[in-house]
Image: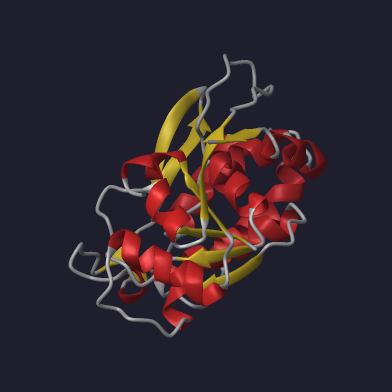
Length: 229
């Protein structure tokens, strides 16, 4: 079984979904500390031909709290309006914007569940069949940290192969995973250019940008363009 484990990121770039599609089971890592100015509640879209940072407003956000101990602010209408303004002339706006609205209308305002739902909604739109589970729902030794905690999750879930984002090369040791009978790979994304508006292509934007300019079948082809190292 191939396993992926990542913190929930809000409307992240396509590489995040490449990892989800590449595994059989995906753990939403929600019982770890929130990171200020990370990607848990923000990302970039295309606005007037330029990269534009958007942020999901939170209540009581702190690096001293776990992701699942923070709430999303109730009123997100301004951000939804910004997304509408940015993409209302995009070719797949009529298909994608109802998905976006459903994401923002989600009733559970717990940050982990709200962002986790946004990921699952997009995965459903793209017809990806990966199974999801929240790390907080798994009975485990919470005294474990870092690599040891990931190894424990791999073992308890029966993973033969753990796949992580390429940035994890600095965090995880292949030899230690091998000693525990688990293959460790890192996913290196190949960014595929596509036509946006009349601007030069702007890469590494939210998956919403990819969805606004491409149909699901073409996005799925993009999701398969990566290298495991």
